[in-house]
Image (cartoon, rainbow, N blue to C red; front, side, top):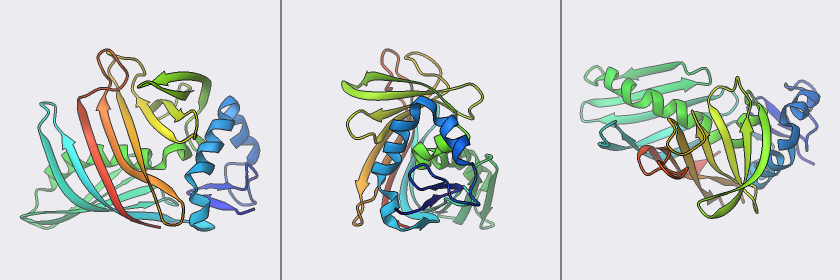
Amino acid sequence: MRTVRFGWVCLLGLVVTAGCQPTQERMVSQLGPAKPIVTASIANLGWSRAGTEIQSASFTAIVTTYDEAGKSFTDRQTMVVDLAKVTITATGGTPQGTWTAQVDDHGQFDVQADKAVDAAAVRKRMAPALRALLRRVRGPYNILGDERPRTVESVRVAGQDAVRVSLGTGTPEAVAYYFDASTAILKYVTTGADRPAAKGTITEYQYQSMPNGVLFPSRIKVAHLGQFVLIGEKPILEVEISEVTF
């Protein structure tokens, strides 16, 4: 069996190798009833087949952000997700020059920009986008970190069977994860709230199959929760991902 390292999490099934935190006991107790679906989701992503140690993922991102009035802004960026340090770095350009922004897992945002670039505007647009994207790209691995599963139940979302894993109080952001009931692949994540007409968001995933058999997000869409259904139609952020390398 292979040992897969993703950020600070080392997996050998659920056996944690020496020197890696959290310990096996802590991981198992943290997952509780969510252990089967979460570990199946991680396994079915196939990231262990990308190599014995995944340190980072680099990709091209077409990023569309929406303001409160629904006005969109789209540009092309290059991004690097550092899985060991738990950071995401984006580089983009404007007619005035280029900029580079980075967010870490604590939400700390930093931007470096050419003198003529409006760094404040980059910060306003990209700080919330990168904070959300860092956690969403890591998907089920967040549950092996600082998010605490509470309950597991079978539900239907958008007419499809899903497994809902709710999170306990004290989690940093997410309220519930929704996994495909057949494949265990993560399909949705809710934040802020987890019911229609509430003040919260839902993230939808689409995936691409890499030549080595790995599944990686091809599209991540964050929208406000719907008025009558969970999946809303008012977008906040859309990211199209391509040219992924590990």
